[in-house]
Image (cartoon, rainbow, N blue to C red; front, top):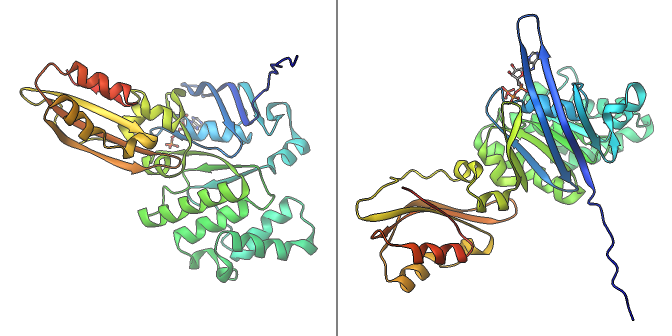
Length: 337
Ligand SMILES: Nc1ncnc2c1ncn2[C@@H]1O[C@H](COP(=O)(O)OP(=O)(O)OP(=O)(O)O)[C@@H](O)[C@H]1O
């Protein structure tokens, strides 16, 4: 007789943060910038941390590569607890973590190729291999034809491409992105997000990014957290957060429409995955012989799923059966009082 075996398999997280705290103290005041954050990011995930200015996002990101030493908690990247490392061992571990910045942080006196070569020097690539690796990295980010240009001769998008090439010099497993598209116009933002998604897929790169832009989460994030006052107030897979009554769902799909209509029940309906493309509203009207008016809403393509959110007015005030049908069809339903 064959016995079934139940093996405990531990999921491997490329980034594993537990109980992270960082307080800035001065004589006059102390600020808890990160106040107890737990975060796990799986291999090949694109994880976005959203939050307003001052929420603690930059401090969190800087704690991941120990540019900032946390006061408490652990930060493991690729299985190594960085909080236990210092000196050379920390510098070597950091090679596995690339970082890109809002203002690019390029060396103005060096050409595009020179900027990328500098990262190779720092991470110990032998001189004989540098030129070929620079060419490979510039090809990867679509900048082969600008190798001899100086940063001042580049557009914002091109500068960020150099930043990305430089960050990937040591073949890191993880890329940290600190508001990488905040200084760019929408079209350039789109092209940089497409590049990041492409690198994520082609290289299996795990990306942890911080942003205040919903577009970034919509376009490339598989998981996200909303940060406020140093804490995560929501976190999880984007597709799951959309199905819950989450702040993220409301912020990703703001609906500009009234929340009350005389003689009708007003509801917000959120669907994701295949449900977003089903004729759910037509079904609803047919089954319950009710007038369904769409007050506002939209269907969009996110990084890994399609999602729709609508505000509907259902005629009459007894619509429980119709709402039940929507819930059973996989929709998240919020009724406006
Ligand atoms: N080096 C520092 N010294 C003192 N306080 C700091 C320092 N860095 C950040 N803070 C404070 O910590 C809090 C969180 O700042 P942080 O920059 O991490 O937030 P953020 O969400 O990244 O915001 P922003 O997008 O504006 O950078 C803020 O109150 C900020 O003033």
